[in-house]
Image 1 (tube, rainbow, N blue to C red):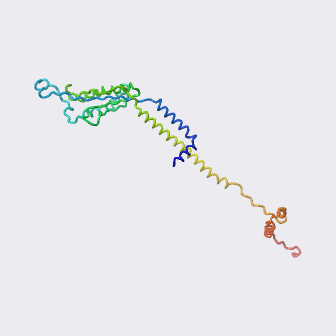
Image 2: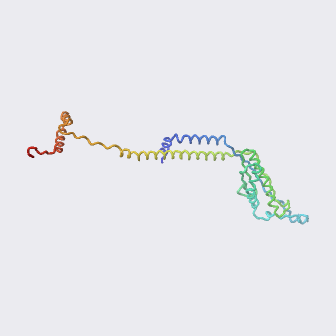
Image 3: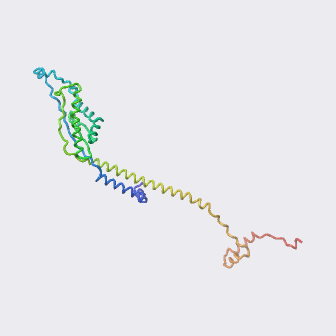
Amino acid sequence: MDPISVIKTLWRHKWVAMPVVLLTIAACVYVMFFAQRSYQASMTYALITPKVPTAVELEASPQLAKVNGDNPYLRSPDSTLLSQVLITKLGAQETLESLQDQGLGTEYTVAQASSFGSGMLLELSASGTSPEQAVDTAVALGNRLTSTLRDVQKINGADESYLFSALPVDGPGQAEEIFSSRLRTLIIVAVAGAVLVFGAVSIARSLELAAARRRIKDKPAKHAGGPEMEAPEVPRPGSGTERGMEASGDPRSHDDLSLLGGSFRVPVPDREQRT
């Protein structure tokens, strides 16, 4: 269907499409100016490697050798292992339920700050319905990251001096509005309104075509059941109709009447011949 036909169809059913269009415009205005906003705050943490005593220090201070230094992440050759563990822990359902219990936002992300390098930088992004809620959620995530970092390293009872630490690098600062979220909602509402408009017009057009087909189907039936046409009256010879035709000078009068008269004459036997 070409655009001109679409426009003509919409205009023909404008009284059906117009209420849906006005409703869609009102919904878009509400989303743009009055709907709930979304704000985002972020924090960046650096994972600091502990200062492990050297062999010389252990020899000089025998008491250092008695300290439990069994931190499994110090033995891992992959420097991103600890950050991956923290991302997995913070993304668990337990963290989400903890934020809900505190009345904070439940939309957040935990990821490496950069795809390059050793992966020792973690960025936390938290969203909320107000700037304060977004900042509080980011701070709560940061505190949970610090506690989780300690817990996963203490699995073998390692001493504090052998643990990685989380150092805040940036944030949370002031939360900023997520305009893309409002724009995304606006696009969804506009697309849904367009679908409703074309759906309403399609239904109206289908009803119109169905009514037209019913009218076409019922039209021959009315003529078929009508009164039969009466045959034209044939003027009899010598009647007033014949004389009227002669007086009017109709050239068909003599030939037609003579033909009709001959065709309707019946010979009658003479009474005297019968006797």
